[in-house]
Image (cartoon, rainbow, N blue to C red; front, side, top):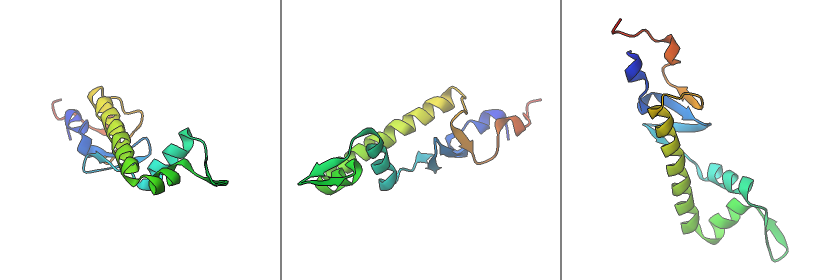
Length: 106
């Protein structure tokens, strides 16, 4: 494989711990709920406590899905930016590391 072909989104297996499937970030409901829980405090309703992610998903599932989609798009854009800059610091590759490749142009 040529080094240039290596920097292809189809060659990414994961980015920042998120699976990449067919070039797209895969973000589960649980991963998004955990993200919300990390940035927001516990929600109290009628004296009972709930995680922010679970509360939003139960109270407003449309807002939850929209927020999840927006967050997934942000991560996707960050991945594509790193690929464009050939920065592999947060990327795990399907075909190993770039340093293991021999350039066919030599």
